[in-house]
Length: 567
Image (cartoon, rainbow, N blue to C red; front, side, top):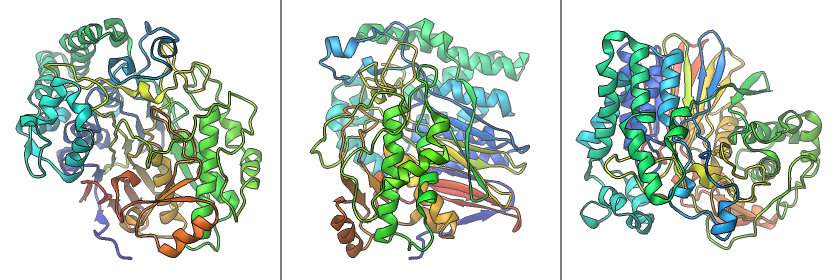
């Protein structure tokens, strides 16, 4: 089936992002002489305005950077729990549940992550890259279909807090597609950070970046955030804010068919993608037709194994001894594959094969789809010098109250921890949630590079794996690989509260043939019908360099308002 859009090609630089105005912002920076880091920061911060339902300026922003000299690093833009939160708060006072609101708050990491990227490898100031987000917040932008549907779906949650409702339900109604959406208070917060930088401009770029950082983490914004937290019964303090720095860490690497896949570490679900890739290779792809019953069954069962290891073992490595080397070892991969029945779906969670960490699962839910609390977007960039950036900013705006007067939703990613401290992803003071956003990058066997990623909560590694195999195993063009119909398994406890578990659930986009669905059902998969195209299946963006052809190719997923630009 031909793609609905062309693969975008250029010779100089390219950007692909989850909203077309974010892509335009990043491209403007590239054309103005900025590098990939500058452009990714401009686009990423803009996504916090353009996707206000699923990305927050005060949310999370994991970033992966590959420099032109081949160095790869990650900026773990994910804040920890406040240091003063009680260790068994939710089980003792909330019946083992994590209620909506400020109790889910972790330290907001995104502003620090973007500024850390600029400090280490950018060339521009905060105002230079944030001016696009400021413009979109102040002047507004057109409401698009996915935004209108998300607000409508979560209308009751937005109405829970008057300030949220005032922003997201202007005039008391869900905004219509095509209506201008303005966020004046968020614009004031961005302008304050930019003005604080400008006030010290004469003392140099580094001082300016520090001033913008201090405006959020030590200045008026920090005081507004923490005072509001205190009034609402939260635990985030000025000390938590002032102490926060995004860790800079090496990426996790696995080699596959001459390519090198890089993911972030076990503070997120990056290892799930890495392990799933090794599992499908060991299980054997050759001879399986694309999206045939045999291929989709094998893919699903391999994903179940990778998600089982995530459930049993993965958490913040500063608190949890995560057996990454063993999880990715040939012996463990072989054991996982040996447990796959090519004729029958595994009925639930595959076994815990590594003797580390408690085996904790949640009861099955009867809901039609797992609730997806937070949201996410994505941006990737490759510049004229060969630098590449992959970033997945995130955080929804309906699971907690925005800080009045600021337009800021402070990260509620605590919902991706468990209330049981004994679980690998159990919460604790100073511990990071096990984050779903997980940018990735591939060093290609031909010498090229490909940053790629997607939103989608637990669907992220599943969508990324399918697109990666579409490209590098089935040989599809970039846009064709992104648009091909996808599946997702939910046979594991979900990352986000209430951590629902669907042991045999397999969702398929409607473009997958009915006879394939029937054959999968015969193997024991409980088939859930998605529409032909759905944003729930992810929104993959990628940029791929082609050294032999001298081109840069970029693709963007039409399941959301994502676009790519190259020249």
